Image (cartoon, rainbow over all chains, first blue to last red; front, side, top):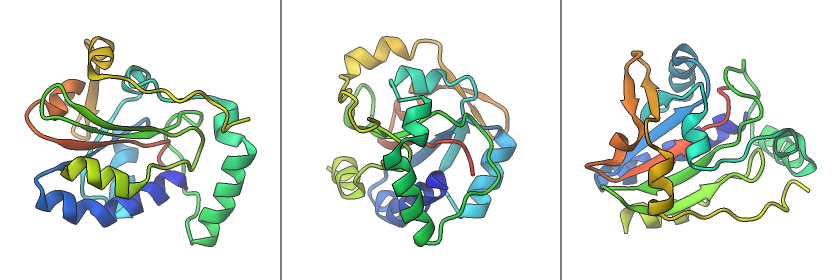
Length: 134
Length: 52
């Protein structure tokens, strides 16, 4: 559900990223088939990759755990997302792994980083856009 | 409690050695070096939770 919410939000800024020559790239923890289904269902037109051993998530020091997924803040965000019409679909991937957003490149540049502290804690898209287009 | 984590920030120099040998898989099943994704371009890289 939170991944759907995040993908929908990113879809909204893709036009501005495209206009600036910035690529939108997503990595998921599930199967390639699950990623393809997810991208089609959510009309996510960025590049999509999977990382089932979570090595990339670990490299970026992203959070993973029970409390991060099922804590009270996550539950409140879940209710808020449901009120906006987002629903949990079939799941594919690591249930306890949290996500994040980074703006990188070209080359050895890391200009924005946001690690989700808990489920539904998404990056401020205005800040992402500002970093990406700056 | 789930909001009380310390904030993690990294420099690229700290990130670089952590990415050594790490690949992601394209939807066509091809292994792609993680750092190659932004070697020649700027990207917004989104780590998703599980699909669903």
